[in-house]
Length: 357
Image (cartoon, rainbow, N blue to C red; front, side, top):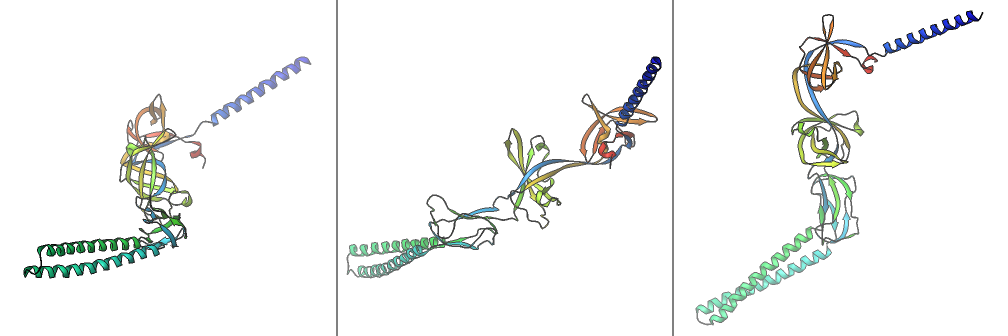
């Protein structure tokens, strides 16, 4: 009985070992990625550079409006978000003091004009008497000098009047550009001082003059040129791709966390009727040169060994590994510069994502 039990135990162990081994082998075989046959074809291969960026106003599209004179703000005719036109009054200062100064200068001009008229009459009379020898040369010279002084006083008074009128115009603050009021830093009733710098009333941004500033890595900046086409997206309009054109490349780098980037500006060709605002984050794609009608294979057909690239070519019933030289990549395809001919059949390894829809 003991021998029978021992034999039965050995048989059970052998069966279990066979089952486990078979299961392991089947699992290993099933883990291999499937392959399919593809052809070497000709197609257009493009390349692109990805970058992050931010929307910024163009130069001159954001203006801080201030005052050239000191005074009390009498009226503030703008609120945040208001749309204003160029030349529109957005603030007024108290003008009583400047108006009084203008009136004073006008009175001084009137007095100077009266003095001038009197001096003109006097010099004319003295000249006439001198011709008849009825006055002395000294009196004639004094009249001539008084006339010249009166003439100069007229010019000074006129200049003072012009200056006072210009100062009076500064009490009205006009919008220098059309746009949207972005911020207000001065309120009605506040006293402002323009002794050191022009105090800011409001900031105006022209939302029609904005651009994208994209940060391109130093490894890609050599491929970038002014005039290249680009597209970008913003989070708030995730379903829209906006088109643009590169207009400038900043010569100075921006270094953050030891990463070197260069700013390139992208002009927005079409906002598609949507409102794009400054400081929105963008994901930018810059399109480089497209190579036309080049040999290409699926990128997954290329393997890399010891720094070289290979493709498995089907020749009859044989599979031959062939060394290739590659170029640009685009949308899952890679350009083949040498090593393959058009129409040759190759093996392509399907990834899990490609194999499972």
